[in-house]
Image 1 (cartoon, helix red, strand yellow):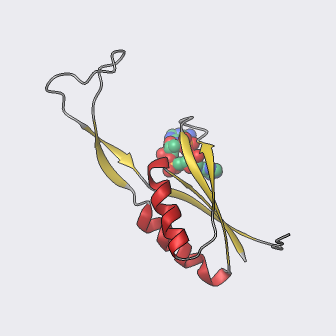
Image 2 (cartoon, protein in one colour; image 1 turned 120 degrees about the vertical axis):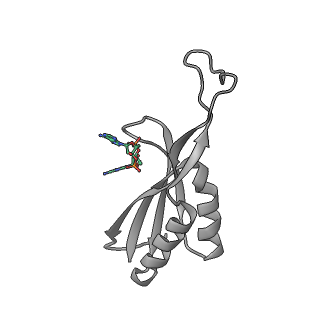
Length: 108
Ligand code: 2BA
């Protein structure tokens, strides 16, 4: 058995949770904070049989692709978008995934 840790953007978390539930993949969703940006993200703990690890990674890849998104450009200090302001492209999505071995799994 393996324990997969997946750190994803908050905006991708609900779709990922739905995809796990559809496939009867057990997952726990935790609210987390990135150490660099100090912004909220979501960490999933997923315990799976070894032969389903690739399926879990495929589901994460499908639900959390790295992509460019248009974001409004705000005037610093005002929170206002300048008239005629052009949205900037920012990186969104993606995931950090760790796969670790599980010595034992006990349900009490
Ligand atoms: P990512 O590398 O995609 O990482 C996204 C989030 O995944 C991280 O949020 C952190 O919560 C987690 N994470 C990444 N690597 C990890 C690791 N080795 N162990 C445990 N958790 C890990 P943040 O720390 O807020 O980082 C957000 C984004 O800022 C990163 O996206 C990366 O693009 C950038 N970044 C992180 N550290 C950096 C650094 N020292 N210098 C420059 N850019 C950095």
